[in-house]
Length: 210
Image (cartoon, rainbow, N blue to C red):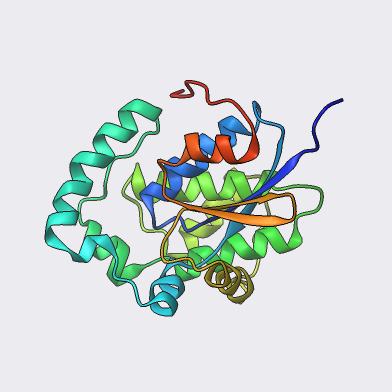
């Protein structure tokens, strides 16, 4: 008898390159593991403020390490990460609030799954973390929507609920995977916890670099 499908919620923000890595790997495992992957776009700035955490990019040694670390991870997982010319401006001055409101609005109007949310999220990651484009501009959001097969949609205040739910799970950063197993929520932070997630849900780990 086949085991019941486990539900994994993935909280993320497109401002986070580590979220992109976690997102792509979980999308690959979705086709291997017996799971229902639920995408949960949320606002990382709200998580940092609500948890009292400090972004790693604001710690000089962490920022230097991230540059090397992201290069290695991008090569290993074959995710086309190429940091913007001014990461500080992109992450901390411009931020992602308008972009994540847009993603949340797409999710609100989508019926029957997360296909459009997945496409829009990936396109926004591509624009900021591969093409060095400004995702805060309305034209950028509209272009991302068109590439995902959407018409122009209003950006609404729909992030508060998912961000608060992440905080309720004691989030302090993204990506955050919440595995629902036997009525209990098991929380995993980071893009390097796939073996532990597999152990938690009783699934095998496989080489999914591409």
